[in-house]
Length: 155
Length: 446
Image (cartoon, rainbow over all chains, first blue to last red; front, side, top):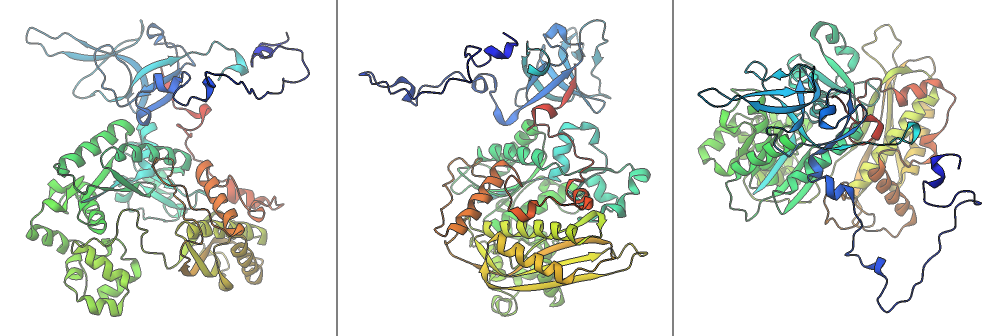
């Protein structure tokens, strides 16, 4: 085994090229299961993208959001159709720039207005949402894709 | 009732979704060779930048007024368009995608409060895609388009129309007197299908506003203009003459032209450009199911470069028989260039014009540009003529996989002239193709 690629397509390594695909003509009283069009293989798009017209992919740069499971280089699925609430990890527009942060609502009660803030891991200072700098939510991060592959194999 | 929804300053808005720092700044999108402004933000319009104005004329505004110019990013605009159209399609049983940023919806039989529906649709598109739109409702497609124009103008220029018509305007809700006041305040050139030349002729005859046009005598108009204008008039009066998916009035000529980022001095450069334009014009011709009886070619030096020697060539080649065949049209265009080209000039602009355009019935397939977006779209009819089938297949591939996936040999010639590469690839300011290329997705600080 020279590289992880040898197993990439599930074929045993060291043969003269890939095995030619053979057409299976299985005759069976039960019919050919693969031909049933109502059966669908797992599709990650179906599972993770609830609003396909409103979902965008983004690349995380930086390690301030490790607490949310997001590391440098991860791929984020961002859904604009969702409404952000307390605890949502969101893409916010901060000073004209896209930034990933967790939205928190704090301090409500006893006649005090609840305040919103955008937080990241310690020691990054939270950003307080004020009337002068209102919250601008670009979208809600729904999913983090981490590739465990290295180097050129990484998508 | 019909609705017409279109994106406000669509290309600029697409750029702003992924580059929020551009919001509030004057922004222009440059044509694919970075030669001219093909889209402008409201701030850029306020600076006086005109549609299709050459970039070098406004370039100084970069330093003096903070103008930002980006190269056209058609892949991005195409994907954002598909998202926008899909959202719009949720609101009505039938949709006609009319252009990259415009679609008609048929609300026939829908009894909801259309203004509320329009506002909901507008808000949903803005939330899900980040794109601002304008919505117009009218009893005919022409009225819907006019209502859209008023919705957009009322939003952009407060005071131009009543403020409650901004963003969403429903003619069906207005009383006759209110409508007439709107039509009296609207230039006749704003009407769909009334082009620049017709506008000038109408005005010379005393018809200045939409209301003037509506009060004009139908028989006189038909005599002086065309049946197309008569149809427009009937539509303005509320009689629907164009159903959804009815092709818009066939274009009398199809023009594809462009200014060059860098002047071209060699004949190969002009040949390359003109072949390309002829090929694109032919594609549009086939999209509307027509053939052309003649192709015109022009190329000229820049009158703005006063130090340059000036030359302008313009020639029309009649074709043996009307055709929509790219190869035939390109050969004629090339011949025209070779007879007219003169060395020693710095050519700044060129174009190809198809004229004597006529319909061909159903001999040739008309293509549905957005078949993927409109799920139930029937497949394009397959023409019998093998040559026409080649053209149909070529158009379908280019529509599906992006422009220039497939080209005829002579448009793709590898050439020795370096300036041709300059012409073809100059797109220095293009933003990343955020939504269609894996390695160009937006980067977010986390």
